[in-house]
Length: 314
Image (cartoon, rainbow, N blue to C red; front, top):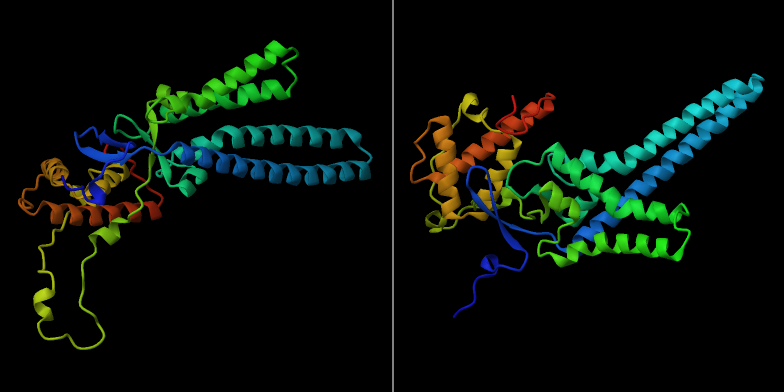
């Protein structure tokens, strides 16, 4: 039996993601090494932000004390220091918790560390990530990682048994991804999410076609080598307004994978939704033009401060 082409071979991390519209999309689960590297990068970024904020607040606190001494009003300086301490506590809390929520709830579904490692968060049911999912998976991180570390560092483990229990707790949750095929944390299991590799190939490159060179005359016979012009499709604003960023990303993946069954299914879904049937037997060209115009519409709206997350958004 001949070997399959490289692009068709499936590894142990390949999965199929089924969207709410019933479209099957091939995806790849992120490797455990990539996930660990992303976590380390994010923790380093958070640490740098915490240190920078602490140094900035300390310099402000020094100025407040100097000003209080100059005015001979110790109470004023004390109130200023108390306020700065509260600000520092709030900033530390936001960096440790809101950092992950802010980035993973964004359109990329990834923190800076995940983006550098080429991975992102996705919902296992094929739908859009919700705030409940992201909050759940990140609250579990406190239980998995920070709780035993804080317990050990605070001196709560006064006996050997307490140290052993805290260490065992830490190891159970840290090693949990090694014992399931998708490399899921307990937070992912509860939230219904998983971490996927981000597609590296850009759609623009996949959709590009050969063009004749602009410099120099065209050689005789080269005309036969040029691709035949295809039909173009134009869509009204009302036809583009039915979908948002989530559907745009789904359409991008379908076009990138270029699977006939997926293209046919998506074409029927979109054409039925907007009441068009002029793309019959030319489904891919229809979807390419729809993608281009939908993307331009969404980007134009974003520049005006308006975002449409998905088809359910107003």
